[in-house]
Amino acid sequence: MVKIMAQGGKGLAAFALIIGLLGAGAGGFYLVNEFLLKPDVVPVEEVILPKARLYSTETPSITSGTTITINFTDATFDTHNAYNYSTSQYVIPEAGIYEISAQFAIYADLGDFLVIQLFNGTALKTRRATTASRPTNYFGVTFSDLYNASAGDRLSIKAYSYNTGAFSRAIFGGQYHTFFCIAKLP
Image (tube, rainbow, N blue to C red; front, side, top):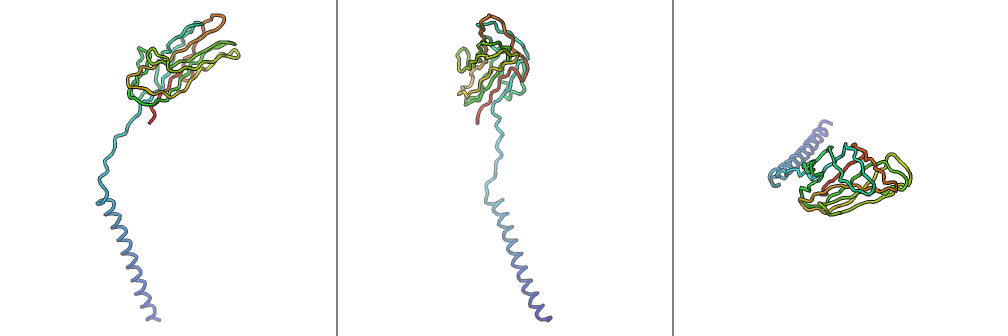
């Protein structure tokens, strides 16, 4: 019995030696592959794409039949400080495709015709028109679009209102009521 155990012990020792050599070989391969065969990895600087969310705290009025430029007074964020508060324009910092959405909230009566517009300088680029089907003290006029911009484009948001009574309508201020969002797509 001692002889059988001694033979089994030699076999177990040989098996353990083979497993140990395989493990050392795998570990050695990993070290050679990871540190000698792979080229040095150079960290890449993080690229921050232009994006902004602007809103207005003002409460301007629109006289029926007129257009006003919405002045956004605050920013939730503006990664490139691209909004010019004195001209009410977002100056595109980099050429590319941008996703844009904007809204103004306004008191509306039955039949009021309202338009939100995106301008580049003096050129109209997109708009959305809607007509109120009932009186409401909070009517959101919105648009969302993709825009192929060139660096230096000057984007602004305008609002138009028409009603049969020739009344002025107040736009609601606040970050959830009147806002402008823009983000460059990768």
